[in-house]
Amino acid sequence: MDNQGRDYSHIDSLDKALALYREGKLERLYMLPLEFGGQDVPQNVLYVPLGIVAIKKQLDETIANLVRERAVAGYNVQPEYKGASFIPSKIKIVTSHPEKPGGFNPTINIW
Image 1 (spheres, rainbow, N blue to C red):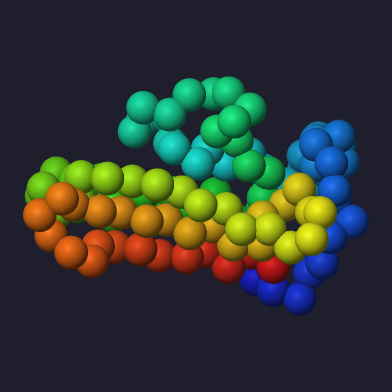
Image 2 (cartoon, one colour):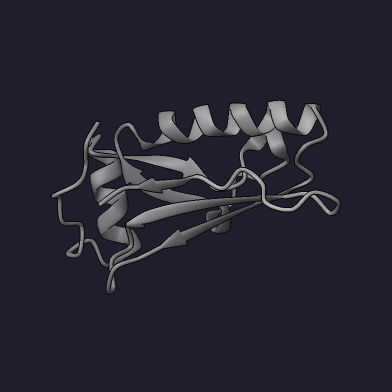
């Protein structure tokens, strides 16, 4: 799903994001997936447009394979925002390994 061109700048609070979530217009995304040890707590949850969770799930599956291959040891999610919006404009995933430079570092562009 292409969310480019959409403007989420008016969603500037958790209450507004939750209202759209209840309407089925946003979905919950875990920054650190539960299967990676993340917790279902507010600090680990982002609200994103429909389709973004599926994209991140595919990326997380790739990362899980890299972990099994011992090519990745570290994982960090960095949401980026525009203005006061509660909806991230991008989600950067940064992986690392203490003995291997570089890594798999995809960015999901949301809006």
